[in-house]
Image (cartoon, rainbow, N blue to C red; front, side):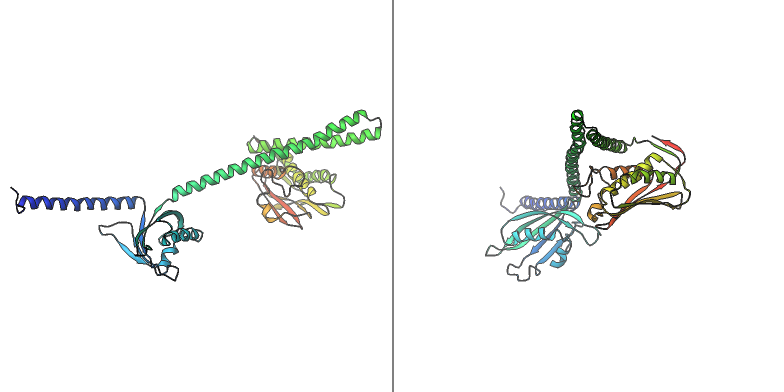
Length: 396
């Protein structure tokens, strides 16, 4: 019979107490492991419900990393506590914090961008705030918070958002390109078809020749458009052929000048500037002429008065700098950054579908050079590309 005083009964009671302590010790250790593995930071916020200073009198107790047998905690000021938040994350923090301290929510979750003192950059963290204690009026007095590292996941999300945004933007540009291209192709086709029918029924030779000139001009426009589309496709597929050979740059510039002069608008002067009396240069004459012609055509479209200048300068290290300057409308700064992209146009009323400069950039890059623009809106523009000299060779 157990009278409550036997040693065996005392042993059973002691064993239960030790088991409880051991279970608590295991639970604490497992919590430490989990907190450390997930980089969880925890703290308590002792709130003064009657504060008049925007909670600057809040007592913040930080619990750091659970790294030792004893939980290490430290007191920090409220200003220090919120100073780790990126300025753009502060509104999100305050919005959720007020929901808790005003008793509107028992618990809130939000994401914030923070920078800890030991690091020089910001990290994304996931925050949870929960009411732990209330006063006799039901107002929150202690709030427990914890945050965990979500930087990798958040970075992946933001990257995915950017990828999706880029895909959507590319899809819109593709649709716009197809619409623009359809319009540009239909314009000369309609002219060719319409005036061909009129030409068949007119008996007046002078009128017939007028229709013939219109058909011829629109046929050239259509061929140029198709050639541009094919050129850009070849450049982007990296199958464009470049043939390097010794080229007399002055003779080539004379050819560019002669062909450009025929297309000059009334009242606009064409100027040629040669960088030397003689200049032999290893390049592709067809592609170089195409580059100068494309830039000259671009200048013609945007210049109604003043002058257009084409020329080159001799640079060190067997390089040449070619340029086309105009006194046209100029290009706004925000447009300059995307000017060499596909389908880019200074305005929606400009001729063409915005392929010429994209072709120029692709060709210059293929030939090992660089291209850029200097422009002031309302004053004029200067397109400059630099090419290195090449030995006679053939690139596929």
